[in-house]
Image 1 (tube, one colour):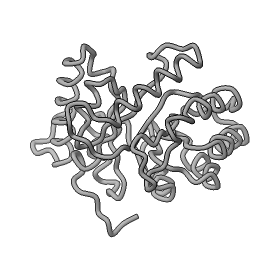
Image 2 (cartoon, helix red, strand yellow; image 1 turned 90 degrees about the vertical axis):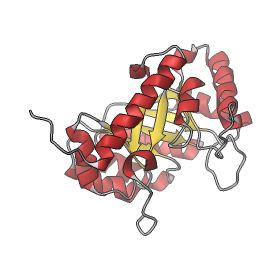
Image 3 (spheres, one colour; image 1 turned 135 degrees about the horizontal axis):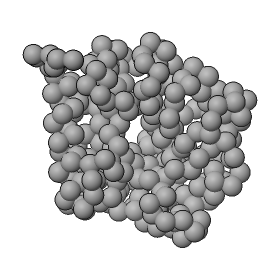
Length: 242
């Protein structure tokens, strides 16, 4: 199939992001394939998602249940959807029912959400759902996530008491910190070390999802396996939509 003579701005931006991901991964001694790029398409039209799908991108993220419920049925079934951020426990069943190709929830921030997701997966009869536990690494009251000191307990609950969930790692939406050693990232690394010790697993069995448009290269260099990129690919968020 011939490559279009003129690519859309989102496609050009995605290619630039993937190149930056490759360089950051190589700098940290890893392959670009070791890093998952979640294109966060909140408030963006289907046409833009279609453009990125057309050049081979398959991993997209949304922050609002109603938006992903509306979008997913109108797009190809092989898209790997990620729900990113706080999920109201009462909306777990609606999310899973409407989006059968939901690949991961980033992230679970309390036992009630974990229990409702676990129950919904069982009732629907779909394959176990991958989840990341969300940690509030910045201590901001406006941010969701479990306190770092309570991270191990929540992970144990997901791992041991939610048979329909697959604990896959940790995520954070921290306060922007563009220094060479962001505190939010260091905090999540410490949480991973504690989780791995408590569960007797290796770090390779515990993904890290940290880093967004402004700091994803630093996150990759510090070990992130998952980066969530929105504005750098799609342009500024349209705050008139939610």
